[in-house]
Amino acid sequence: MRYFEEYIKQGEPDKREKGIIWQTAIGLQQVDGLKPSDYLIETAKQNIEGDITFDEVKHRIDAYYKVSANKQTENDDRTEEADKVSARIAEILSEKTFSFTPTEYIQIHRRLFSGIYKFAGKIRDYNITKAEWALNGETVLYAGADNLRATLEYDFEQEKKFSYKGLNKEQMVEHIAHFIAYLWQIHIFGEGNTRTTAVFLIKYLRKLGFNDVNNDMFEENSWYFRNALVRANYEDLSRDIYRTNQYLIHFLSNLLLNENNILKNRELHINYVATKKSSELLNQNGSENGVNVPVIDEIFPVKNEIFPVKGKKFLVKGKKFPVIGLELIKLMENNPNITIIELSKQLSISDRAVKNNIKKLKNSGIISRLGSDKTGSWKILL
Image (tube, rainbow, N blue to C red):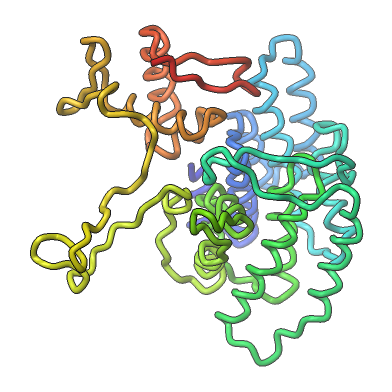
C-alpha cells in the first residue's frame, strides 16, 4: 500500500524524503507478514508534516498500546510489533550517521526490537532452523551458535578489505549481493534478522554513495528480498537445486541501477518450473527434441482427483467453492505456517477476501487451524 504517495510525488523535499523513509519502514514489515495499524499511518503523516518528532511518534505508539493492552489478541501483538518497529526503522533511516562495524549491526537490532524481543541486540546462543515457503517448508543451514561472533567479524573484515575500484556498476551489485547474502546467512539474531539486515544494507549503500536509489523496491518487494536471500543460501545437489545470487542481483539491480527485472515470488519457489517460451526451442508438436517442455508455473502436491475443477469452481463432496479457495489450499499445503498477509500477497487479493474464503473452507471441514493465529499452522483435512 502506498500510504504516503501524496508526499512522495508532490511534497516538498523534506516531506518527500520522510514519506519515502516511512514507506520503506512499513514495507519492510512484509518480510515477516506484518501489517501496521491505521493509527501508525496517521501518526506517521503528522511526522511527515513536521507536527511531531520521531521521539513523539514512538511515545504515542507506546501510549496507544498501553491503553489497549487489556483488549489485545495475538494478532494485535503482531500489529504492535509492526507499528513499533516501523517507527524505529523510520528514525534510523532518517539519521545521517553510520559505522560499518559488527557493533553497528547489533545496535540496529537492539534499537528495532528493544521491549519486543527479550534478546534484542543479543547474539543467539542456540542453533536455529526456519521453515521457508520458498523451500517447501525446508530450512537454510544457518551458522552454528558456537562461532557466530567470530564469523560475523570475519565477514566484516573481508568486506572492509575489498576494493570496488575498477569495477563497473554491475560488478559492484554482484559483490554487494554476495556480501549481504553471507551476512544474512550467519543469522546472529533469533528473530528480526532480515529486517535488521535490510536496514543495515540501506545505510551501507548510502555510505558507498548509492543515495539515488529506487526506494519502491523495499516498499513493494521486501518479501521477494527475503526469499532471494533464502535462495542465495540453499542447495540440494541431489535434486539439482543450487545456491544462486541471481534473484538477489535482480532485486539490487532494480534498486540501484533502475533496471526493470520482473520480480515474482513464485519463481523463487524450489518447485517452480519456468515456462519455456522461445519458439526456437519448440517444434510444431510443442516438444523439444522429442521431449515435452513443462509449461506449468508451480508444482503442488494437491491432487486434482480430490479437488476437481469445473470452470470457476472446484468441487468437494458435491459442493462448489470459488476456485480461489483451491489456490489457498495449494499454498497452505506447501507452507502450513503461511500467514493471512502472505496468502493475500501471493494471490493478489485482499486480506478480507482471504479470510472469507478460509471461513468457507473451515466450515465445510476442508481445512483447520492448529494452534493460535500467531504460531499455529494449517491442516488439509481431505
